[in-house]
Length: 293
Image 1 (cartoon, one colour):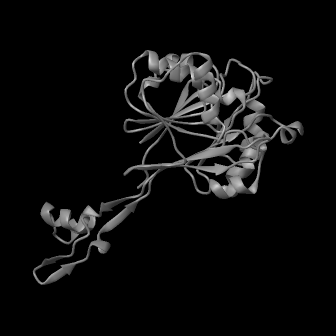
Image 2: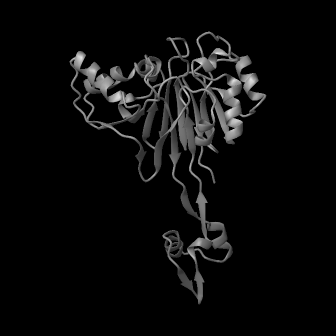
Image 3: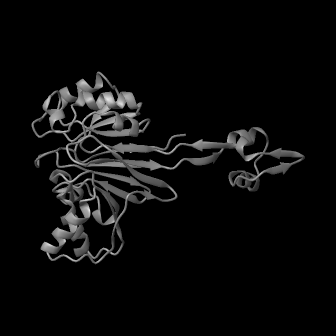
C-alpha cells in the first residue's frame, strides 16, 4: 500500500491551498517531492513528521517549489537528526543550499547526500524531463514487481507442503512422486504501484512517454483555460487530462492550482470530459493506492 499526502497543492504565491509539496509513503519510507514555503507548518497540520523523511526530490528552482527546503533542513538539524538525508534535484540545488547555510551560519550535523536516482529492494525513484521555462524534472516513484505463488493452483493439485511451496518461490524445481514441478508454472507476477509527479510543465510528448500506464499521475493544472499557461510553461486542466488519456494512466490528480481560483469545479469538469478518472488534489488530503494483484 502507498499513501500520497497532498501537503500543498497551489502554485505561485502563498495561498490557502499551500505551495507545492507531496509526500509519498510506503511501509516506513517517506519521500517528499517539492518543498514550497510553509511546508513544515502544513506537515504539522497533517500530523506528519518531517524528521522521518528519507528523501526529498525538488523538481526545479522556482521559489514556490524550493524555498521551504532550507528551513526544513535547518529544523531537522535543530531537532538533532542523525539519519542521512537524500536529495534529488536540478544541478543548482547543491550551490543554493550551500549559499543559504553559509549565510545563516548553519552547519548540518547529519549527512546530506545529493543523488541522481534511488533504488532499494522494494522501490526505485527516478526522474524525467518536463516542459517548463527552466530546467525541470518530474519524478517516478515505482514499487518493484514481486513474485507470488499461485496457492490455489497448488491446492487444486493437492500440494499443501509449505517446504515445497517455499522451494518453488525460491525458483527451485521440485520432484514429487515422479512429477517435476517447475517454478515458472506456479509463480504470478504481482505488479508494483507506480506514481508520477510532473511538477511544473506544459503538455508535451516527453511527459506522456515518461508516465505511461502509471497508477496515479499528479500533473500541473495551473489554469482552467488560459493561453498564458503555455507562455509560462504550465498546463490547463484539459491539457493534464489529455496527457492522462494519451499515457493510459489509471487516475489523474490536478495539481499546482493558481491562486486566482477559489472554486475548482469548472476545472474538474473540463478535465473529466476528456479523462473521467480525474480529481482535484485538495490540500491536506491523502490518496491511498493498494497493491495490484
